Amino acid sequence: DQQVKQNSPSLSVQEGRISILNCDYTNSMFDYFLWYKKYPAEGPTFLISISSIKDKNEDGRFTVFLNKSAKHLSLHIVPSQPGDSAVYFCAASASFGNEKLTFGTGTRLTIIP
Amino acid sequence: KAGVTQTPRYLIKTRGQQVTLSCSPISGHRSVSWYQQTPGQGLQFLFEYFSETQRNKGNFPGRFSGRQFSNSRSEMNVSTLELGDSALYLCASSVGTHTGANVLTFGAGSRLTVL
Image 1 (cartoon, rainbow over the protein chains, first blue to last red):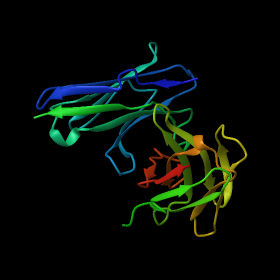
Image 2: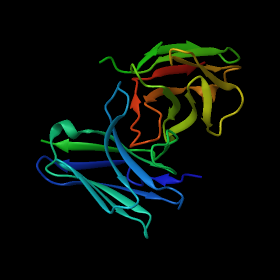
Image 3: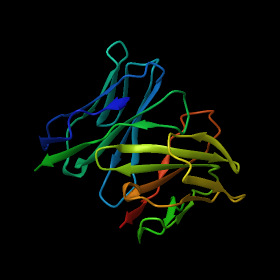
Image 4: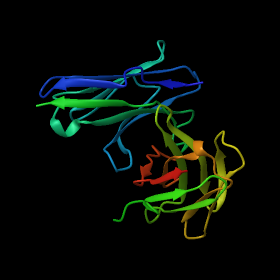
C-alpha cells in the first residue's frame, strides 16, 4: 500500500519556467513533509520541508505548498534551471524529527535549455 | 566536514549468500537509518539505530538486520540473499535527538546485485 504517491514518473520543463511537482498521501497521521532531490550515483539531498501547521514554506527558488484537506503537497521551482534536472522524492513522517520517512516513488524532472 | 560514507559502493552476490554493508555517519550524528531503493518502489525504511539501540523498524523480514557501534558506525546484514534483494541500500545519518527538524543526510549508497 503506497501511502505517499507521486503519480508523474517524469516531467519536462523549459529553462526559466515554473516546475510543479505533485505528491499525494493517504495516511492522516503524517504531519511533517519533506522533498529530497537525487542525482545519479549520489544519495538524496534534502531540499525543503513543511510542517502540517503551515500551508506554505519558501526557500529561495523553492516553495512547498501543503493542502491538508486534500492530502496533497506540491513543490514549485521558479525559475527552473538546468541544474535542477534530477529525481525528486516526496517524503512524509508521522512525527516531527522522526527518522522513519515514507517516500514516494519519485518524479524525474528534466529542464530543457 | 565529511559526509556519510558507505562501503562497498558496488557488490555482486549469489542467491543464498549473505552480505554486510557498512555506514559511517557524519561526525556528531548519533542516529543511523537504512533504506532500500528499488525501481518502482521508491525508498523503503528498513530500520534506525540510535546510541547502539534499534529505535525504529520497517516491514522487512528477519533476514535483514543491523547494528550500531559505540562510535555510531552502523552495519546492516542480509542473510540468505534472494533475487529480489537486488537494490540500492542507502544509509542516512542525523542528530537523532528529535528536538528539531531532523533532516536526514544520505550517503551515496551500496548497490547490491544478487545473481
